[in-house]
Length: 102
Image (cartoon, helix red, strand yellow):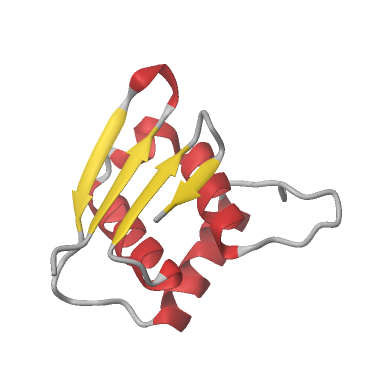
């Protein structure tokens, strides 16, 4: 089964990625997202400070913006990490709507 990640950014920018054949381990994916969340100085979505994996994906995607996705290595790591962390074949990350759907 083919796996894809669609990213919608501000100003109507839409990016579509096919997930590669070599999967990232879920723990490695969570660590990568954690590191990006910290490196990009992301803030939790919830007032409680609890950060769900989908929230982390949203904030990292928002902070990265179109500029980070131009870096092929970063984009490939992002796709593998999001796919492994959320464990779904079809993922849509919609930054303007602040939603992640499967």
